[in-house]
Length: 269
Image (cartoon, rainbow, N blue to C red; front, side, top):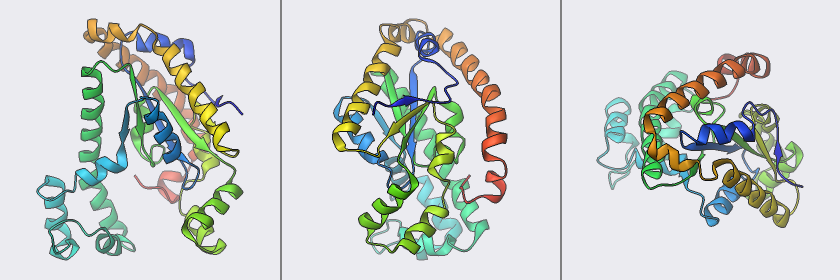
């Protein structure tokens, strides 16, 4: 099954206009055990520049970073390993049942992660890359989906997702179901998608969809990416215009599809 364009706020023709003046950035996400990491690896193998939020999240808390210093200042030395690195399990146990501490941790980490992600995108632009993909597990739960040109969701039916999670982690159906229930469902994430990559079939099928997706990205940018170098001031104006347009188009969708999610649901800010 070929990948699908779904709920698109920005069509392929509009993407060509955008990329004539500003770098085209795709946000890639999915649910646990839907195959997002596999798709990200396939894209990387095809030469697509990837900005991985998980890697960045580890970098911003490496020893000596401001992020780690702020965490230690607030949570104490007990969240450190003997070698001075962050002990994620200890930190997780501290914030697990304390909403205020979890929010404080997010307030420390999220700005640093976003700044580094922006810098990675800028570096790809300076290197003359036509486009890049942001690999972000919580793309929809956080505000990042509002700032990309396209949202791509790696999908599989929830029953397949459950079976894969059980097989991968060796967990019981009850534990796997509880873990899925604690996150935004894949069906809800698809509601935000401009592109859906269906990973419910074979590896070969998935590879075909990824190849087709890359071809469409290449068509979208064509030669116009050169103008993002030649006319950077116009690129800034173009980016401002398209982000404003997306905000307007998505406002109703957010209220309809996610009403109550940011206040009552399991997602993280």
